[in-house]
Each structure stands twice: as structure tokens, then as C-alpha cells.
Image (cartoon, rainbow, N blue to C red; front, top):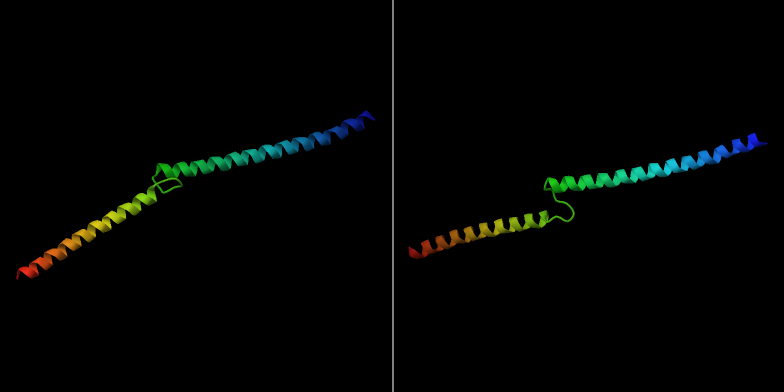
Length: 89
């Protein structure tokens, strides 16, 4: 009788160990996913790429707007000189 009792105890322990191993594997997978996400984010930050929380897009848009403004000013100055030249004749 005690042999059967001992044999019956192993299976619940094996199941318990299997559950613990599965839980550990899931925890490791979660940590790995979080670390991968952090590495991707840090790679973006370190290389100056646009990323969540960065002002890269806003700075780029602002710089392009300033470039367009500068071009418009130069073009208007050229047109004004042309008009003045025509009026002087």
C-alpha cells in the first residue's frame, strides 16, 4: 500500500514542477520582450531617429518652414529690385 501511495505522490509533484517551469518560462519571455522594447527605444534615441517623446518631427517641420520663409524673402527682394529697376527707366 505504501508503494502505491508513494508512486501517486510523484505525479502531482511533477505537475507542480511543470507548472512552475511554465510560469518561469512565461516570466522570462516577458522580461525578454520588455528588454527588447527598451533596446529598440534606446537605439532610436542614441541615433537621433524620431521616437516617441522626441521633438525631431517638430524641429524638422520648423526648420523646413524657416527655409521656405527665407526663400520667399529672397524671391520678394528680387521682385522688388526688378520693379524698382523698371520704374527707374
